[in-house]
Image (cartoon, rainbow, N blue to C red):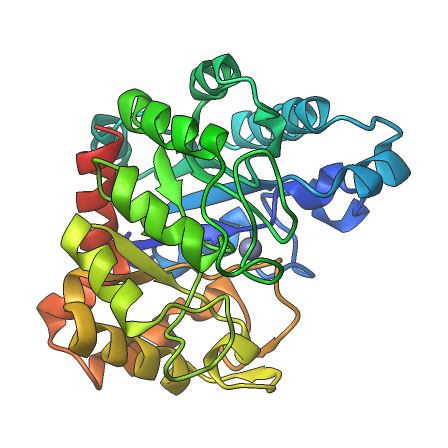
Length: 323
Ligand SMILES: [Zn+2]
């Protein structure tokens, strides 16, 4: 068994079940997916952020018959709770930094509930408290559609956060929920820089200078993340690493890591796989191949720096934001 050391800021594995993917019903062992708990344990995973991806309302209506994002969030959270509760010999949910330390001491992996798309809030700030109570500790403010918080980078790159988005950022700071700017417009990103009093993250994004897609971050954005004490999770999608490609190489992940570190310091670099949310062919297979990514990082960084990228930076940000 490998030492527990990998923290991953984003995967879409859990919500596949809610979306009607029968294969994903067994989180413990699912060889057809990019990630399952047994392979995570074997690979040396320490903590996984499981995103509850909230699809556009039209898609919710066509798959579940319930045209409401709040219902969908609750169904997805129920699914997450069921999957984690059935596997507490391997993984346990965490709500505080101290929970992670306890799990580590017990040799148990940690699981953090996150949300991709803040639309279940739908303008109701009190729902944020309910999300926190359910265990949510990170929210990606938007996905690829406009919502009540703001705009995605694929539609309105210059638009800032809406007033409710700013209110949400402030309340997330107070509660101890990590703000995630992945998918958010550049204008929204800079509003997060302006209004957040705590470190924030881009959970699954790369360097725009190396791969010119809007989902990636400019050098100025990387430095702004660093100035706030936040981090950027490296996304393993081939076309976010090298423009218009579909095969992901570990060397390209390491190249983006090195670039980010050179521009903004190694303290911002973390892992944000996007497992089961991407369709690239991965050189390393799936979660079982994290050691191959680590080997590629070892060729560009010192051992202490690799530790920061694989887990220490994420632990620091969780401690500074969630508490
Ligand atoms: Zn995403």
